[in-house]
Image (cartoon, rainbow, N blue to C red; front, side, top):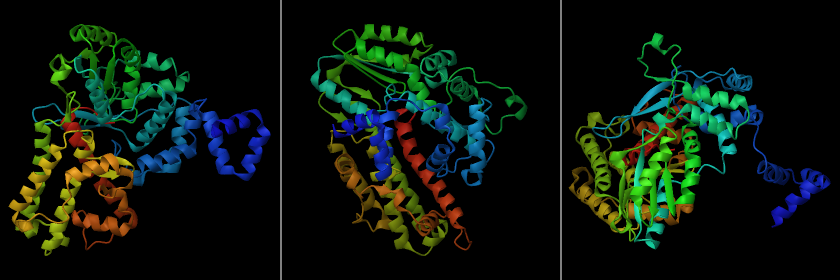
Length: 500
């Protein structure tokens, strides 16, 4: 109430605003933003302010070493010059994207890999700026709930309605089949700046090629259908595309939840009839239901959704997902057993240091067990499955890992005292995340010396060679991003959904 009262005074009596600005400038800025930004959206000129572009570059781009088709990395990106180019070309509608570099991500054995599109540094920055604009315009329209939060909502609804039926389905080739004309028409209802529409159209029509694709065949190529996956704007455009369908479904059924292309509907009866109705709704957007992934059933019998097993009584994890985690953990034991047996294969810093190698093994194992965090984002298997109510799974996994330790000769057939447990990691994530230091924090490696030591452990630098601080920082960021991507791939691999 106090904040509301002060805001009303500022709007009604500008003289008070001036007094606050002189005596308390920081509070003034906060109040002005709270007063006006909540009522108006950023203009294209405002989002393309050089200072805003610089801030987005430093927070989103400079820390990631990814290169696009031009081979330019953030460390060699001429930022000040490029910021001005981005602003000028976007505002005069002359900005064009370089074609995207194809990156294939495995979805598991016998599955077609997912194709991601990697933009150049300049294009990535432009797309991030564009995403900021879209986030502002569509703040009330796009639901950003995490998948495990959706699972918890489904569970709560099932508990209250165990006699209901469910319809679980999947949109076939969702991103690949989004119709450009339909999408652009939807965008035009809220975005009146033609330059923004033009930039979005150019972004989604830019094709994706592998680095080996003949250069002549790239020229004048256009992507006529679908949204390239992996771009900063990919997820929000996909959400906008189905926002009207989501709004309609929430009105006509008791419970509706969609995460990317996965849909769950719960209703008293006639789930099969709802399947027919949903098929018709999607057909208007030139999309199809995936018959192989469509299932109708009774809530009381449970359902597998977003990698969770959900019933009215419990939220659990399917056995094959547990087996996958244990297989990867077993792989860590196998890798380090080999390093222990063959010292020539070890990183140089551990060549004659068995105890050091053992400690580093435990650190690596602990990361896989507890997951990790960086820049306020959490990664890992147990992070994803932090909504289970079947705690017996956690203790079972811990016992199996302890068994692996006792079978390991390089650990002396004993369980290390500093081995972490997945059941404690679970409770730390659920109930003590903000104050916990139990989860590995990449941001705690906050000095050049610490980063250098981590690189030495991975054998990613030559200890006899001299490196600049910038080189060490860039190499560490590259290593960190690779490790964080491996956590995200675990989730992608398990659920087959695009993470955003």
